[in-house]
Amino acid sequence: MFARRSPSKLVEAFAKIFPVPFRNFGICSYCHRDYFSSQLNEVLIFKNRIEIYNPGLFPIGLTPEDFIENDRPPVNRNPLLARLISSKDPESPASSLKRITSVCEKAGVKVEFLRKKLGFTTVFYRP
Image (cartoon, rainbow, N blue to C red):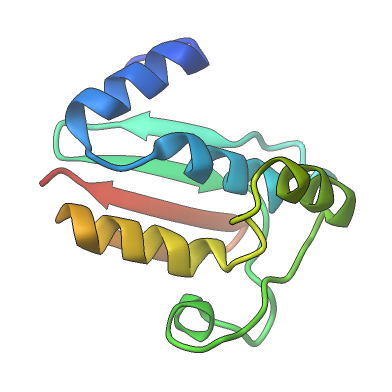
């Protein structure tokens, strides 16, 4: 089903399977997680997809489409961490979901955003 690997090995594995920049997606997952939760971020690798789970609830009353299709600014759960990341990556203030969708469309990778009771999962399907 999936294998445990070091972060650098995961990035290498992703690059071989998917033509999208997973490093940025992983960073976004940590930036938006709920640090009061004892649950950890997870990366699951299956034969046909990769799932990145974030133990942070999606903002109440908002859907992924609100950020993808509209010009809704991001909701920073961890403003200090978001500021630190945006100082290193000038593109990061843009909506992560909008950027992920755009990059995946260009690469021909189907992506799905799933709201869970205790978190949020981004699913990347193998092209």
